[in-house]
Amino acid sequence: MSDGNKNLVLLGGDNPTTWIVYNELVSQFGLFPIIIEKSLSRSTLIKNRIKKLGLPRVLGQIGFAAVVRPILFWRDRDRIAFLKRKYGMEQTPPVSSVIHHVSNVNDASCHELMMALKPDIVIVNGTRILSKNTLAKIKAPIINTHQGITPGYRGAHGAYWAMVQNDKSNCGVTVHLVDEGIDTGNIIAQAIIEPEKEDSFVTYSFLQTAAALNLLVEAIRKIRAGNIQTVPISGHSAVWYHPGMFEYIGNALRGVR
Image (cartoon, rainbow, N blue to C red):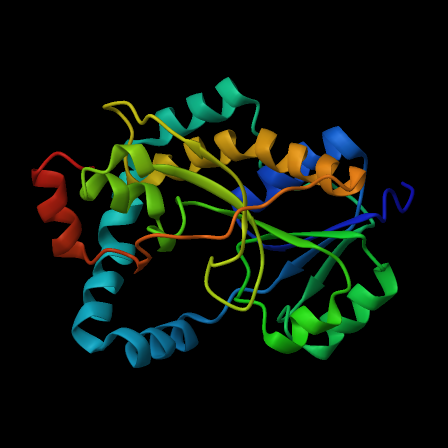
């Protein structure tokens, strides 16, 4: 297999949405390199969250991740399969020589790889926050698909929290430029999703990814053509995190699955 289209590089975490995005972009633009970042260890992730959010809140999140989320994935497995078929989302990683693996996108090894690849456009999906040093090393526009409408639903699980807030007009996805903040870069495009009654916490991300794919493809084409237009974020801004177990159960009793 050839080295493919080196004009693009995707920095991603090893998760279904990364591979859905990558496979779609390959179908549109041809094969190009992807750099997969190793996930943080569970202990490191928990320690970081405790520092940021406090122990009680993190214990609730651990309970949700360990107990509730696996049940949701099992219960809604048919809905997830249906959405992937409906929107043609392929999450199986391809067998390719242009898949690279790094421990951390902010490490020197990743910087060296990026310098060797010399991309003109970088797409980010599900990695750590890019450090100031990493941003300075990348001499190309960086675009991210954020699963929420910014700036009101920055952080994690924007569609879920919009539903919890009964804010359906802001339940969606954003394609934006990456800057030093958390989902604070200039907006390229946004789309609203309309979850159905059978959708839930674990299916929203597939609806959001499906809605974002055309936006992302169009953004890449506009950047290549030199006519990309962006809008700075404005208005109420908030960062959201994972729900706690009892928090989720309480919301579910109110009808937000």
